Amino acid sequence: MKTLETERLILTGWNLSDEDIDGLYAYAKNPNVGPNAGWKPHESREESKKIIEELFLPHEVWAIREKETGRIIGSIGLEPDRRREDVRSMEMGYSLAEESWGKGYMTEAACAVIDYAFRELGLAVLAICTGPENRRSQRVIEKCGFQYEGRQRKGYHIYDGTDRDNLMFSIIREEWEEDARD
Image (cartoon, rainbow, N blue to C red; front, side):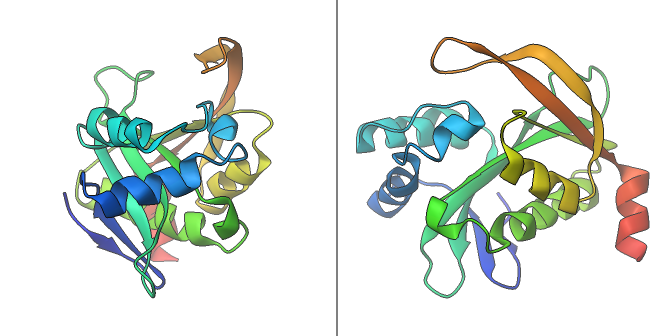
């Protein structure tokens, strides 16, 4: 997995080291983080290890690290786009430690992953979904140039057993190329 670097961040692949497990657990146990994305707060280091093993390692998911300290502050990844068959498309997802909110880190990381998706993977489209109540995520999506596609009613079954609406967004290669020229 390719390491990505921005002005303030380094995006690296995850591994099963104590540092990575502890880094994920440190922010994923916070009840203000996971539920915004539809997943429950982690209850143990073992749960964080299982997430790394079963979700992060099989997909293209990076640990977001502060360049200055090396500390893990979040995750960002790409997975198959379940809504677009036979199109070179992926879906991006992310989470960020609460103490790192409001500093522009996620927008910085997302822009690096978007560039990677179009330059390296040759995607035609990159999609992202978020819940209607997740205003912080919607702001990142807007800053990164995604366009609103619509609302999918009851489109995401979340950890507490309820079904949540999805707000769906995408950016197509031509839009990204236009932004990259500016």
